[in-house]
Length: 409
Ligand SMILES: *Cc1c(COP(=O)(O)O)cnc(C)c1O
Ligand SMILES: [Zn+2]
Image (tube, rainbow, N blue to C red; front, side, top):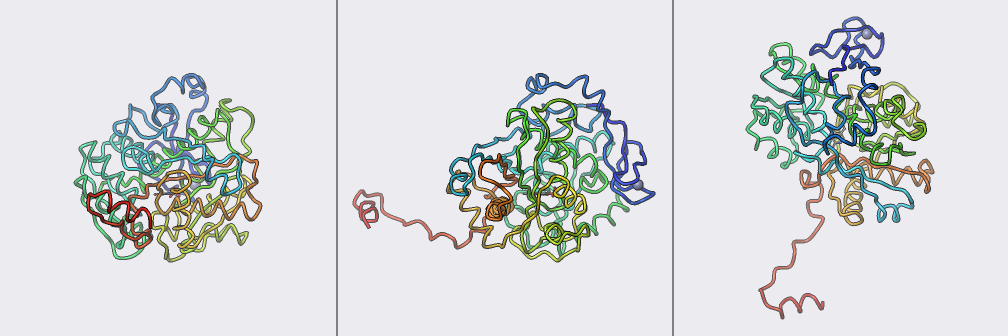
């Protein structure tokens, strides 16, 4: 913490002060937080990290804050589950699930980015928090704004799952559903940002926001015993998480925190009904062609991904690939993960499990390699995906004979 030099354009490398801005005014490239790694190296070791709290704040020195975090002190450090049962079904000997479906407090990986963004927004002096969301971000922004005692305005596409809506409203936010897709919502929010001095966590605070997801990568490496896996399968929406996991591995490597070198292949996972990134990867193109989303995996349904180009580059540079699965495969994969590992993920998790299966069939992921599947959200929030999948349970009188009658048939 306190190791931020400023912002830097990812394209032209021009430097900017630490401010709530996200686009280079010269080349329109995205701005990134520029860290003083020499200073970080002086205060960080495996030991110092292990002595930290059981939360993402064990990596506090890597976070883009100048002051102590203001919200979300219990976010992160979620289980890395050794998935032997699912591995047996899929034919993988060393399979792990990084399980952010139980992330505190709103059950998705978005808590990692939001607590950094809101802490930074408070440092900047904002008193209203806002975002454009596909659902999980809405839940997390509403919860952490409540914790901070700040007002929040949250914009989502209409037609989201009931669980995502209720789990936003409950925190006492102002929620607005916009007719259209996430991309329409995002465009509207950029206009609103010009009229209201609000902290839009994934627009003007985006450089700081995105860096919270590096903790997901740090945790994978630390929990594997300071090693990085051979393969990581990542759900892709705007392409922030996928690029930050890879960045996190390389930061740990260059700071001397890892055993060996990073040789991780990064795989992008999308739903076929919204697959601009995996389509580009599969066609060998660097150009993202925007699409109109049509899938039950609503949390990752971004048709015009902000960092899509960098998502494609991450898979390419790492030697990975991209694949997508149908909505039917998403549902089958949600059930498979639940039945084998006892983990109930949302539709985005169905996407990564389904895509992993496909990548194994294609020979891109091999049986002896260490593979991590990213599970980023909780199934209780997307119950519609399983509507009608099970008959209601039998109802009986509280009598032994009634139970025996159904037990024996
Ligand atoms: C937001 C989200 C992602 C990925 O988001 P990026 O924009 O690509 O960083 C993945 N899974 C879930 C459940 C999400 O809500
Ligand atoms: Zn630039």
